Length: 198
View (spheres, rainbow, N blue to C red):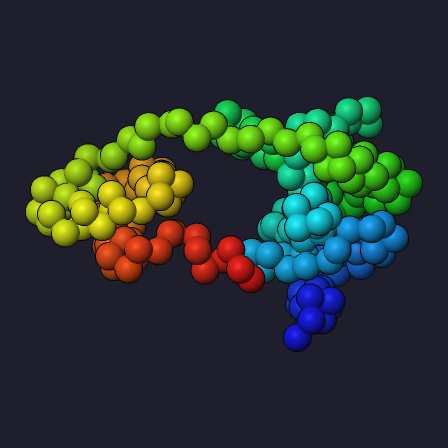
């Protein structure tokens, strides 16, 4: 199945957002961006770099600008979906009764393309120390093999796992998450690896 066919299939499954997806896709396909599917969602790239993604949620759909921090946002359309967490990513939320203004959407897309060509990239800081949650530390004390396999992972994969456990509010949920990730750590895979080549 080609990327275009995968996007067709994605849109065909939509219910409340189908027409909006079709409209946005039509706009995006007028540009030089390449249409792909990444993490199960339509994604638009330039020379292998992700510029824009389109995603559906329960109460809204969104255009994701991967280096949206550099957009001028003169129409005040963009939000940081996770304030304090997301650095470069910006989201344009479209709610059920919003009208998609094609010309304004295209203006943002073209600016994002220009920024990509200019090499404007906010790189994540790589020197963050990995904070190990107490539950995972305890699991390491019970299994040297688990600790050694965790230490073999890249810092990014280690952070994915520690964040996954830490974000759970209840201890029971943390334990459930720990039980899920232990076999993955032993396999040397990251928490989100299965989505990275979709």
